[in-house]
Image 1 (cartoon, rainbow, N blue to C red):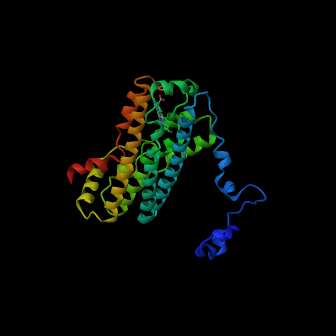
Image 2: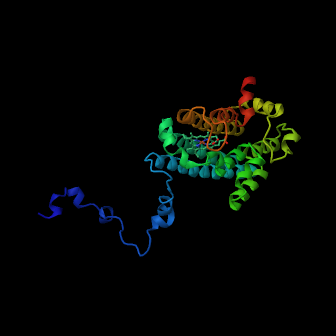
Image 3: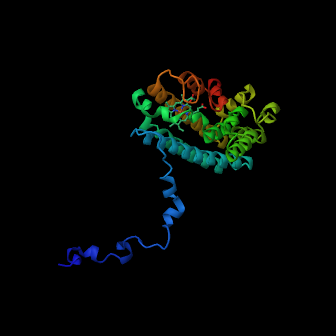
Length: 287
Ligand code: HEM
């Protein structure tokens, strides 16, 4: 019996284009490979131990680096849009970043239950390597207003990374662009904030807090109040990343010192308690 004999009348009359199998024949590498570079991406896993659990540790770290890269791209898009008063484009980029931050945070799952014995199986192979040396994470922090020139020091030996970080250090952060926009819209952002040294960490200001209080006390559906809420979502998800990292670290190594030389959990606790976009949180007490 021919295969066609099994076909129902509907299947027999499907247009041929729908039943055709995908192309198998390419002169060179596949168009998928040319775009995605999956062959490069899936051969970047240079393991340093024989422990079978090291693979997921390395790949989770690489996956997070890719998400950091996407999120930096979104926040830079948002900052540029705010500079030209284009709030819809800025909010669209920030909303994309919220979904991406959620995906980033879900990628803690494979490492969330790491035991000290499991982590010890490859910890030695990491040497002094630590996420503290992640330049893309630092770019994220700089965009949030958490600037620090000393965070460039570990990257002195990597010219491209160092140059990108140095540029980001001196550029207005995403939050600086928000405050400049509020000023252009007539809100009383103090000159000291607008003219601040951009390479320094943003310090909270009572006047900025008063502006957010005013915005939150008014029409909640206004474009600026909605921008504030979108930024608050971003801040919350960063806080969640830091806390998930803290808990995973506490489970995997207790109070031991970190591979990067810090006090470990005690140091991370301090970092995780920092508020992103501080006045967006403190203003809530006055609304
Ligand atoms: C469960 C496994 C992990 C443990 C035990 C751990 C441990 C630590 C420790 C102790 C620090 C403080 C610096 C040091 O002394 O090393 C640190 C910092 C850091 N780690 Fe992890 N980490 C883990 C997984 C990850 C992953 C998967 C990433 C993703 C890239 C990551 C990113 C970071 C970043 C960005 C910092 C710097 C945080 C800051 O500057 O506030 N870590 N980690």
